[in-house]
Figure 1: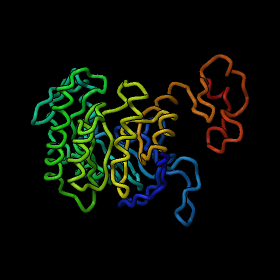
Figure 2: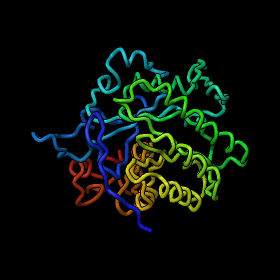
Figure 3: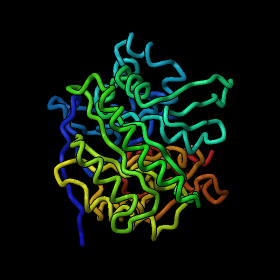
Figure 4: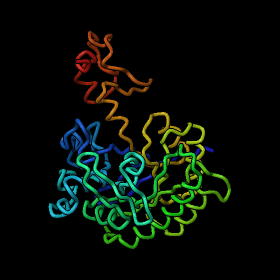
Length: 323
């Protein structure tokens, strides 16, 4: 069944048209791009007439809380003002760091205790603290703190624990949320790869729908599982989420995955893949990818992609970008 859809999400800092890919600005900036470049060129009707200007970008709560600190951001008027960004922001909860910084984390019912990978400083992230930080950051969409387990973890009991805990932590997040009229709290569906009838994904989804949140995310994927299982979980969750609420697939950004998951009914995506790939000299084009650092690019005085209207293709050659 073809479930792709186009919609509009009305947020405090403007409308977001979906399907939408959200660039990741971990510490309030997207690497290698200035806020001016992100803003693009706007005409007198406030319409985007340039090729970048995303309607929403993502920030990372754990990293922003570590530096510069969310109390400082609140004092300075929130992340929008701090980074000079007038469009929408989404912040994750810090939960993903349970996977990415697992060796530096201790997970209990209370929350997650991290040791900074930079200086070893200890940080306790509870559902209440995550929401407090996100209230101080001031993003338009904020995420619950969930118990995230790598999708390839063989321990089914750990998935059962994490799924039930994510529901309990959601209730604590809802209780701690002090800016409900300004910030939209999304729940995150967990449950590993279990899409059996009455299984972990279905149980988690049913519980979270009872909370009637502004939107829902599909979490716990893009962690190394095979594509068949990945797409089956996305199809299962997307088909059961409300038609009138945004559906956000977290951490997914490969071009093929975007196309397939839009067809399955997903509205929102984020990933570091495009910007990280670009920093390593790889351009994404309709036919696939081009390795601009390869030796055969050194004398190619042609655009990255002929006919492309973007700034890079209009003003620079493959030879220049090869340097």
